[in-house]
Length: 101
Image (cartoon, rainbow, N blue to C red; front, side, top):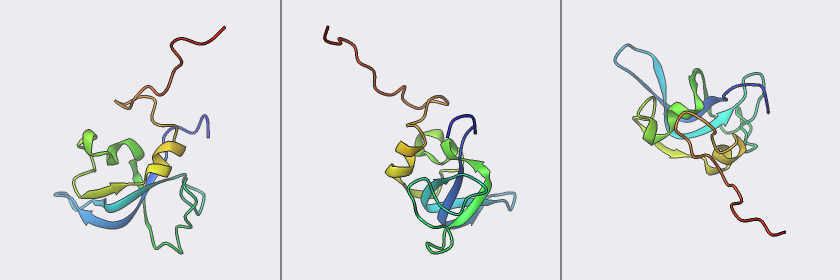
């Protein structure tokens, strides 16, 4: 969804950081606030996923070091649906280097 910025996070579990703020743990999925499903199509309520409005999607990747301390799995379908990540250290994506005439 172009122009919306970065998706928020929904996770199967949660933890409290040093300041008492809820952070995602377990399996994480990307989710647009205002909808009731993840980018991979899971219904938030039926899947019993917890919503984290205050955590941006890239912060859940282990390489980010942000909110990923207890994240066990990042949903690959959500990662792909979020655009593969253009920016904030994500890969630049696929590009054709030698196209045929």
